[in-house]
Structures are given as structure tokens and as C-alpha cells.
Length: 485
Image 1 (tube, rainbow, N blue to C red):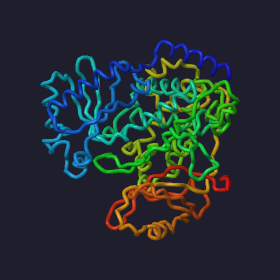
Image 2: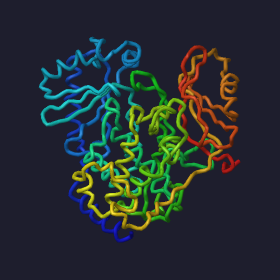
Image 3: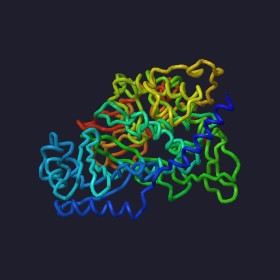
Image 4: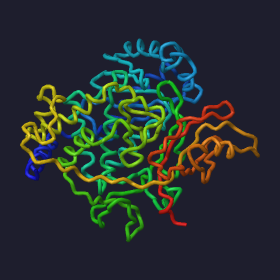
């Protein structure tokens, strides 16, 4: 077993040496953005627009032909038309997001290929050997790229593993939009990071909850992103959804300091928070175990994959009929696999890849040339001549309480308060210990379920107050007994 994994790891390292991810240069990125900006300013000169690049190319996980993702933020009233106007992408012909208005203009500007993806309202175009995918939304919609970028710095193996998974997914045609009942690469990235966070010891820390001695997950560094206004409402599938793009970017990887087992630690010299995983598994071992974990061990029927909650969480109340659930790290009511109708096919590909690799077949042959990969299911190798596989250990964090945001509360008079009504709404689930006003429309709520286990409680994704739809976005779970008084 050790020899097989060692050989596989060596071959994988050799393969990665020749197939390296591409990170778009700042100059190239600015040139593409300027072309896009010039087009929209010319045809819609009176509109406010903010252009923000994000996605795989920005993270350094793209290929030469990977599309550069660009978010275009408009003024709130203009963005709201995407929610309020029926089929706005087709019918709202005076707006820059209308495909019937923009696509003919793009063709006249020399764009060769254009396609529209309705699941996230994105336009894909190719021109002058450049590939762009743009959408219209709040800038907060792009913050997941920043989170992934920071996870890439937490351990040198993270980028390599994510790139191996991208090569594997491309070779086996795994990546597809939700319109085609598939999962985009972003969803597989969340799968991988969630897997790495649940190992014992974990390869990466939970950047969305680092201070386990404080109910507030307080950070002592004033410049940490967790101290910024991280909550908002963004548009997803033509609906407003709550987003809480909260994470700690104050943690640094430092291989020169003592190993960290489960949680980030302060540098004894300067007090900065650092991470140096005690887990020393190779990229080859991690990839094999990733396939085994999601192919054989993860309970997709009862749980959702969750990066925010160290690997998994109870399925959202709206996901009970979804055969697979991958929770978006910031929009916890959003399932990145919501339209998958045959989860078994994806799981079978993981099983098949594991079986083929376990049998000694090389990675490159497996990812491209093995026919009907999903029909292989032999944990001891395709010839059943391998010893029983021993998975890498995982850990489950005890959590007795959780905290969440209520976003979009209707405004009240100066002396008004929703506290009693909110407490009553959640009384069937447990007890609210504390509420904190973040702004006039947003509350942070600290909650303890009656069961004493916060990992299994299922809260509603929205509530109604005074006729207004209020969005519930979970932040993190915590163990009240470990909090310092």
C-alpha cells in the first residue's frame, strides 16, 4: 500500500511539473477589463458600473483557455430590476444586462462566440484570443474567490490538490453548469476544501471560525476582513439571497513554527496567527482519499458538504429533496449542486477513479482513456489484489450552539424592537441567548438548540416579519462549554 501511494505521488508530482496552473498577469487582466469596460461605457454611458475579476484565473487555478470571470456591479435600483422585472435578461431591453440588447452589439464589436448561462445570469464570450465570462451582481458575490485564495496560502499542497482535481474533472467531463444538471468547478473546490478541513489532523484551518474561546469569534487584528461589513443581499437565480462573506484573512502559513493540530496559534514572538498543519499526507494520498471519502464514506442522503462547518452539516430545509447538497461558504441557503438529478453518477466516477488508481493505473491514463469509469467499483483494486484500504482519519467538532444573521429586517421606529418576536419564532428549535444589531436591517443571533447538538439542527432559510422576507444566513457553530467567561 505504501509503495503504491509513493509511486502514485511521484508520478503525480512529475505530471504537475509539466501541467502547471496559469495565473493571469495583472497587465493582462487590466487589458481585458478595460476592453469590457470600454464596451459598456460606450453603449450605456449613464450607468454606474464596477468591474471586479474573480474565479479560477484570479486564484491561479486556471488553464490557458480558462475564462476570466468578471462581476459587474450596478446601482442597487438597476440590479433590483433583475429580480422585479419578469425575465429581465430577455425583456428589459434598455438595461446593460439584457441579452437581446447586448449580444448584437457584442457581435458588431468583433466578439466571435457568445453564450448565456441562465443559472447565474452569466455571459461567455471569446474575442481576440481572450475568453471572458461576466455577470451582474453585488461585489460581495465575488468574495468567495478571496476566501479560496487565502486557503491556497495555508499549505503548499492545497493548490496542487485543487489543480489535480481540475485536471481529473476536465478529463472525465465532470464540470457542468446547473442548467445541465451538473456542478461547476467552484463546487468541486468547495468539496476539496471541506474534505481537507475535516481530516484529523486537518490540512487547513477553518478560516470562518478561528477563535474557539470567544462566542463572537473575535479577532484582535484590526485589519482582518472579519471586521469589515461582510453581510449583504445578492442575486442568485433571479432572487435576492442573504450573504455573509465573513472569514479571517489574518492567518499566515509558517512552516518554521511548531505544528498546529486543530486550531490556528499565535506566533510566540509577534503574536500573529499562523498555521502549520500537523497532517503530512502527500498530495497523492490526499487525492486518493478524497475520491474514497466522497465515493464511499460521505452520507449525501442526510448531510450537505460544508466548508463553513468543517466538512458537513445537516441538510437545509429546502434541500431535503436534493440528491446532493454542497453548501456555498457564504450563501448558506444556496446549494451548489441543487440541479443534480443523478448524484449516483458523480459518486460512481469517484469510486471508479479510486478503484482504477488503487489497481496501479497511472493518473493520466485514468483521467482520459479508461472507458466507462463509473462501472468500476473495487476498493481493493480492479483485480481485488490490494489490501483493505485504510482511510485517513477524520474528526468531528463538538458544537452545542450556533450563530446566524437575519438580513433584511424591516425598519422600525426608533424605540421598536423585534427581539421578542424573533425569540418566539425560534422557540420551537431552541433558545436564543443573545442578539446583536449590526445595522438597522441586520441582527446577529446566538442560539442554542434544545437537542444540545448544533450540527444536526435545521433552521429555516427565511422568515417573515411585518410582511417582509428576512434571510437567515448561518455563520459558525461553537461549543459553549469551551468559551472563556
